[in-house]
Length: 201
Image (cartoon, rainbow, N blue to C red; front, side, top):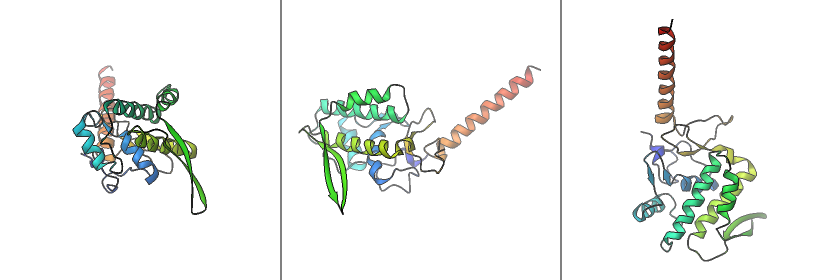
């Protein structure tokens, strides 16, 4: 089994071959908190949240987030994930969901260059996570990298990965197991079709 599905730290680049650039990796990790490969939503239960953030997003303090805050984060994650997956109406859905998060633009001068990012405009403890996710999303939309964030095409996987290939042609989060599984399924499907066609003659 590929360790990519459960590689749970940003330092695990040698385990997960399709990590995102540093400024998008927290967003990718956030999206993969809905781990569909194992059927576990890491934001639903307290013990899972503690484990996930300690390993994948350790820079965020989650101690004071209440259940309503977790619901808002789950709604945001799912809306961004729908956008990445190219689901119909995802942009409008995300616009509506993002409106529930009080953020503002902060401009900083770093090394003579200006950098804009979204920061919390309120005191709700989940806002730093939402602001970071929306900042990364905004950057990816503006510079075209959003199309490189993909959802694995293996139906029983759904892992979000970053396609760094020149022609943006990656279809699976990893070749082992997802690529191998899907190729084997395609082979068996072609073989069955050939047998059916031969039997009909």
